[in-house]
Picture (cartoon, rainbow, N blue to C red):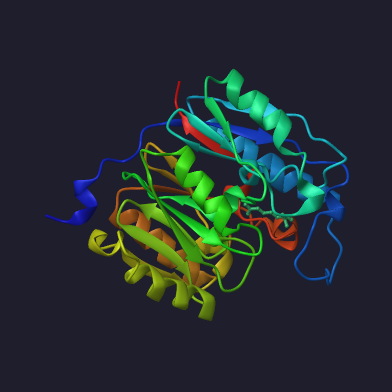
Length: 283
Ligand code: CIR
């Protein structure tokens, strides 16, 4: 029997999103920008994302207002990790972003989550946390943002999960290099960093027996897909080879792929698709 069918498609979810700050054009970037961020395009791209989530998530979308003091606040994924009914509030690794967490913690508590908090010296960005669907395994990138203490405290806060630290050689976050398409398929960026991550994951103690299938995505941006549950997957516009690969992988698995226009302005700010939402189990 195919390993794909051994796992059920995760049930419908709901999401928490955050508005785009008027100051978004001064978001933190790894490299100086060749071209400035267009606020008009950024707004269109963020609106399209939120609109699609509203269409696809019967559990609903809760929208938190932006905070213009935090240009990166739309990247709400980094502020918390929700696993089951527990929300672990992060300590974001970029100093200018610390403080984005507070309203998110309040909202998650109001949505019924049990809230736990990481303590200094831990740092951790939610973008480094990949929960493998249909399992209790969680991969956490040891990156420029997330330290070993962050991984250890996350593991202690989620005792029912197996938390594995994985080095991130390049890029911002673990999920800039890899996401899961389903319980047995990882999508990895077809870059040297993505290839070396694939090798590290293949021999990771505790994960090696899971027989995860690795697919390499030509456009590294599209290694990050948003898995919404209920068989819905969100991607963004890319080159023909990447689009065809994702179309095929989803069709083979009975997943419905939704392609947003390419989020050029989010990409300038090093943001991927997963970063603009926190997913929670449906009500
Ligand atoms: C940052 O550097 O923190 C933001 N400009 C981008 C964060 C993207 N987060 C994510 O993909 N989870």
